[in-house]
Image 1 (tube, one colour):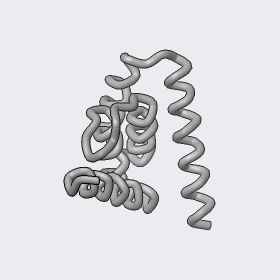
Image 2 (cartoon, rainbow, N blue to C red; image 1 turned 60 degrees about the vertical axis):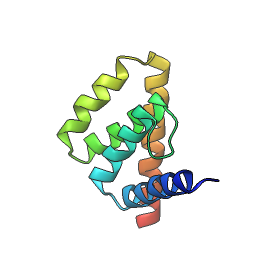
Image 3 (cartoon, rainbow, N blue to C red; image 1 turned 135 degrees about the vertical axis):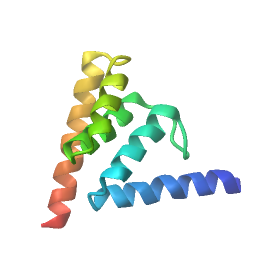
Length: 98
């Protein structure tokens, strides 16, 4: 694995760790990573929608716009999958906090 790939994966993993702590900027950043395919993430609109949705729930207004933008290129089934993944993430992080 090249150094740039290692550092990209580290960035992605560190943002996921920050997101698990409820960091809304990290949630948004993850959405951007999956929307654009940066920081070691492949382009995955379902994942992007999930992270933007979580950032929007956390109160980040620009995440609402980003979520809507991503949703324009998704099917209803993909959006439902993303919403289910967001609910699962919330359930998992809340269970850890308890």
